[in-house]
Image 1: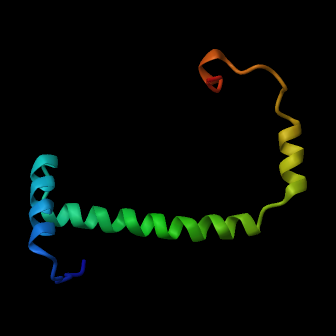
Image 2: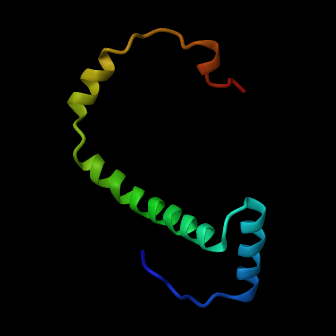
Length: 81
């Protein structure tokens, strides 16, 4: 593990403390979780772009052709209004 010292506004730190207390976690755990979440979002975009480059339309169409053309169950239907 590494240690990171940062300067943040008092108001932001106060919010961190309030949320951490409400969630029953330490401020450090909350910050680490927030950083991990942000990294995941930022890396997710590039992952999806890279994954899309490897895509193959013909393979996709072949797989989709195997899916039966039937009405979805009532709970899977899109709302009409």
